[in-house]
Length: 268
Image (cartoon, rainbow, N blue to C red; front, side, top):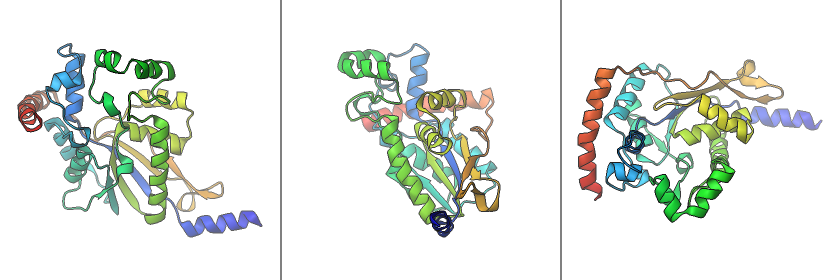
């Protein structure tokens, strides 16, 4: 009769909430990496010309535009909204859902890069050669980049705890979660049970763009009841609602460079 007790316990817990994970909009840290890719700087830190703390890294004008467009096109009203405690995620949530309470949860924070934050490869080789060798040897799933950093295993553990909170507090509801690319990758492992190698491949092939959505709906059946448990299934690969033309993109890039000058003054 143990199986009956498990069934009863599962029904008492209630069905999973329907979950929409939303990556934050384009941030200034990404602008730094883009400048490096253009060959104009050796590191994002050099590209930005200022050391902005990760938790205070704001959205660029492009990021705010992405959030505004996403907010206009979302047609599902959530019962609850969560965001990480990092500014770019909070800012995205506030733009998409203005006048709504945003619950802040540090378990949704981006994977911590520690002392390697915004450094380029030459800086890593100079300051953290041992950690860089480990990263190149073990891969980003298992290895942390530098002191005080995290790997995906650390992220997996804290997100598992967050999902327990969602199941307990928002059973059967609709929840939007504003977070980061590494968070959505770890979430896919939790729900879709990929091994590390497959997970990294899927994350690369099905990259979640800025303000992209990852939607987990209830499995087909009674409130998602399947194989003796309430379950969630991925609705579709990551997708975005916004579309950007080249003229608007160029205007937003110019605004970003102007705002960067103000950030340099603020964080110098």
